[in-house]
Image 1 (tube, rainbow, N blue to C red):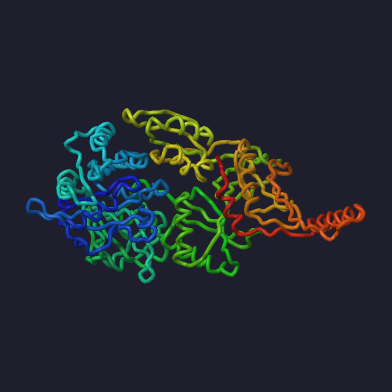
Image 2 (image 1 turned 135 degrees about the vertical axis):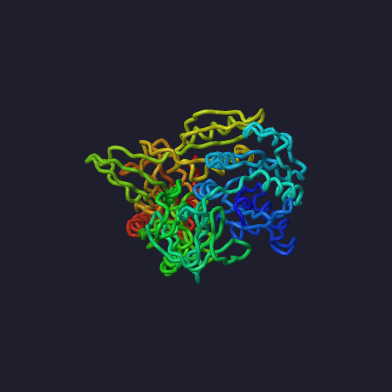
Length: 599
């Protein structure tokens, strides 16, 4: 098969715009699968992906399509659709020569779609605009066409209109892919150069690496080298990516396929790395490789203490398939032994939590999420902390830097006031505002990451009736007046409930947490003080009143001093109990802390 007959493409779309459904229709029309013979969403093979309607892991599949008496190879490289996985998206795009820009006719262009579109343009991909869900009653095809024309500058006749669910317009779209997406350009005679766009762990075969060949040839039995780690391996199996893996002798420039080379860890075959031959290989790696950088950190503890070893093994197995997940041992006076884990974002954290419970049957509890803070000390040294417990004495701190994000929000004009108010409450700084059309606009902000990770997305959807969309990326670390807030229960500091926030929000967040705890911690025979403090200064308090036994019930009549004597005796007993008694804090209390209002 010559390069002229190969088309490598991906689908760019926001969550729930029909990307996985369109992939199913393309597979049916090219006879990779029989209509109705498989479940829907073939490429979303993870149970979580199907439930949430999102693509978590990148996938790829090879199709054959006949056009003008020629057989073309179409390699569809599927991409995740969430902001947490934007680096994986960028590497998938770098493996392609064209992209289908898929837009829901009932929702229009969303922020994440625009973000991925810009990534595609940076990679100089040929963009084919596609309007999906034209069969819906509330579909606004003309309005969506106008959006696409304004943003990309294409002619209306070059926009494809389809219904992925019904299969309408799929044949025309396939012809458009062959005619409009350029064939790959690579030199077979140059040393081998391949880009890893995904890798995953197989229990029996080790790491399976998915690659796009840019130059040269890789063959079975050949020794290969990975640029980032400088490690060498020997190719045991090489082939194409059909519904099942199809083994072949080798892959040449322009082709997409897989390699099995006895690689033991996903960390040795990172997404974005370059593969070449061990002898006489290329000298320069493909651009764009980055080490995965966790953005959100949280303590993960087993609900049952005896599950600690199971949790360690389960995290180890998850990391085999997820190089972006980091973890290290951590201990807490309240929760015992666990792990401090790093995640790409809150969705990544939720996915890991769900997988630990579903796939490994380990119920866990997570502490309040935090971000990476840089602490500048008076002695000139710097500390990087991920855990509020590690915050040094404020007397030694000169300044603290927190991560700030570039944020883009696309919203209908009627909700602009609500959005601006919400973002101002979250310390957002407006940079610019652009009208996409007469009904929608794009607002750019700079916002601290700590203000985004809790419930910002939920509040954004709430104040815009679900119409606003969000995209963000790291901008810089910036000096900020943040403080560590401790939660005290009956004057005892609970380390697992500590959090870091801006000093202006400390009272509000602290009061919200103590109020939540007041509702879930059961009443005791003595009064319990729930306090939030910055150092030794108490900034907020809630009180759980004591349960009271009526000790004077048996005193009917007689002198009042008898009743007073009994009440004084009870009062002294409660005081002694408070001094030596401990408060029973249920596990739900730690979960409720996560739900506390952070606005």
